[in-house]
Image (cartoon, rainbow over all chains, first blue to last red; front, side, top):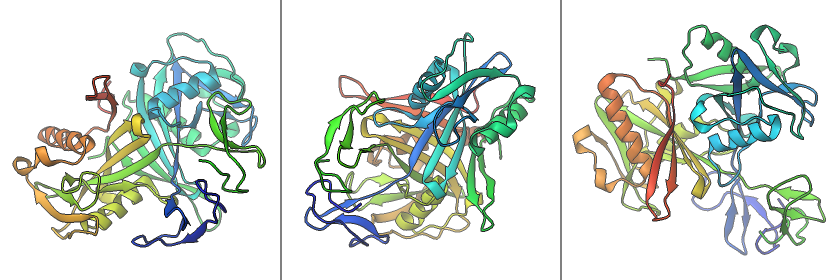
Length: 195
Length: 195
C-alpha cells in the first residue's frame, strides 16, 4: 500500500497514537487503513452415503479435489456465502435449513478463517461451475485422499466419516500452524461435544 | 475508494471480466480491490457463578456494558484475538485451554461476523483497559439487561444462563437482520446439539 485511496497522498507505515501495531496511515486524511483476516466459507454436501467434491479448474491446486468453498462477500452471511459457493462451483442447490455449522479452521499464517457447513442434497443434481473441471459424488472408500486440494478439506472429510459412525457431528475448531521445519500441524482448539 | 493504493491512478467501480459483482478496480495495475466482511472476536469470561462485563469507554454505545470483544487482527487466530481483547479491555487473562467456541453471529448489514468463546478465570483478577470505564463480575440476577451495548451480547448471555441450567453448551450460529420496519430480528441458523 503506497497511496491513499481517498486522496492519493503518500501512505506511511507506523504505529498510530493509541495503537500498538504498525498500520498503513494517511497523514493528510488522518485515516488508518486496517487489514484484517478473510473468511472462506463452504459446504460438505452429501447425497445418501456420498460426498460431493469438485476438481479445481483454477490455481492454486489446479486439478485437485476440494469441497465447494470461497471468499465470503460483503452483504451475506457465512452460510449464504457457503450456499452461493456450492451453487457456483458445484452447480448444487442446498437449502439453509439443510445446513449445519461443522468445522472451523484458523490459518493465521495466511490471515484466513475457514468455516464449513454440513449440507444435504435432495437430488443428485450438480454440474461443474467455471472454477471446476468436474464434480462428482464419492463414497467413503472412493475419496481421492492423495488428490485433495487443501488440508482443511482432508480434515473436514476425516471428521465427517469418523463422526458418521456415531451419528453425532460436533462443531470443532482447529488451528493450522507451520512448524519451523515447514511441516503443517493441526491442533484441535474447540469441540462442542467436550465438557 | 477513489485512487489506486499501488499507483495512485483513478479507481473505477464496475463488474470485472468473469465476475458477477461490481468491484473497485485499477485499470492501469489490472488489480481488483475486493472488500470482505470482518470478524469480531470475544469471550464470555466467568469466575465461579459470575460473568465478567466491561462498561464501554468509547463509542459506539459509550457507557453501556459489553463482553470483551474486538476486531480480529491479521496473524492471529479467532481464539487468540478473543483472548487478546479480553486482556486489553478487561485486564483478564484466560488460557486457550479454558476456552470453547460458543456463539457466532452473522451481521450482513454491516459486513461483520461475531465469534464468542466461553472462558473461565482462575482468579477474580481484572481491571479496566483503556477502552473500558469499569469491569465487574455479575451474577445472573445482577446483569444490567437494559444497559447492554449490543444485541449479540444480550443473546450470548441469555443462551449462557439458559444452557447453564442443563450443563450443556451447544455451539449456535445466529443471523441478525433488520426488518423493513427497522426492527432487528434474530434467527437461529445452526445448533450443534440439533439432529
